[in-house]
Image (cartoon, rainbow, N blue to C red; front, side, top):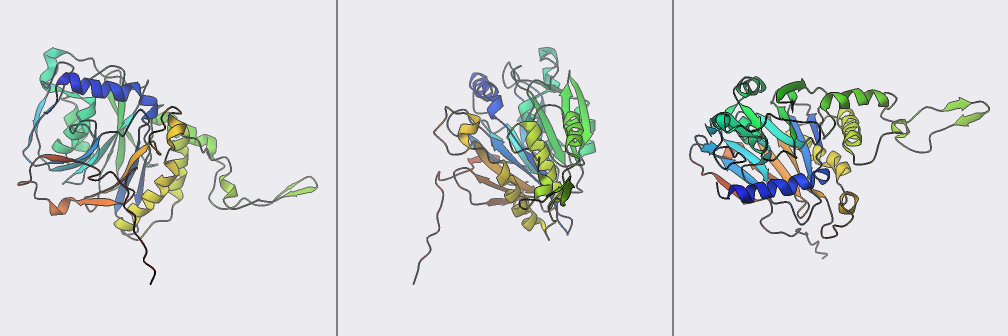
Length: 356
C-alpha cells in the first residue's frame, strides 16, 4: 500500500466534499446470443481530472483493507484474478470483474447509507466501503457467495461523511443492489437493470410508477373537443421523460432507454450500444460545477463490461476511443499486481483522412 493513511483519507475527503458532483449512472443490456453487459459512467466536477487507473490483481495476491487508523483492517488473499477501474487509489475499485465472471461497482449514496462505526476491536474483520468491490471480486464467484461472505465482515467508512451502495452482477444476467443502512446489509434483486444514486433503490422503483404513461414511438392522435391533437415529431409517446441530471431523473431515463433498446446480436455490439445509450448521460462540466471551467466534461470515464466473455471496455473524457482488457489473455497465476493510468497519453487521437 503505497500511500500514508493521512494521504488516503485526504483523497477520500476530497471525493466526499464533492459528493454532489460525483454522480454515476449504471445500465445493463442482454444481447440476442445471451451475452450480458453492465455499463456505467463516473462523474467528477470538483477540480482537475479524477485520478483513475486500471488495476490487475493476480490470484493469490495478499490484500488488506484500510481503516481510519491505517492499513490495519481485514487481511484477505485473492481467490480470483481481478481487473478493475479504480479512482483516487488503486485499492478503490469503482467497477470491475473477476475471472469467474462476477462484476461489481460502487455508486455514491449520500445521506441514505450508514455503516457500523469503526471499532478497532473488530479491525481484523473490517473492510472499508471504498475497498468492498476489491474484496468482493477477489473473494467471491457468485452473488450468493457475496451474501454469505458478507455475514462475516464489518463494512466501515473511512470517513463518516460519505456512503456508497453497490451493483453486483453475474454472467447469467442476475443483478442485485446492495445497500447498507444502520449497519445492516440489504440486497435487492434488480430486474430493471439500472442504478444511480440517492434516494434508496426501492424509492426509485416506486418512482417509476409516476411514468406509467411513457411508451416508445409516437403518441396517437387525440380529439379534444373540436380540435385534433397530433404529435409534432418523433418519440412523442416519451413526452415527459425527465432530461435533467439528478439521480431520480437519470434512473427513469436509464430504465426506459435500456429496457426499450433493441437487442444487439452479440456481446461486442451490445457493448457499443451501451456506450451510445450512455452518451445521453454525459454531464457538461458547468452543469455540475459552474466554477470549474478547466474540463469539457464532468463525465470522467464510461465503462462497459461483458460478463459473459470477461472483457472490460472503457473510454475517457480525454480519449473517446474505446479500449478493451480481455481477461482470457491474462494468466492470473503469473501476472504481477499492477495499475496504470486509464490514459497513457492525455490527448484525443484524431484520424486524418487523406484525400487523393
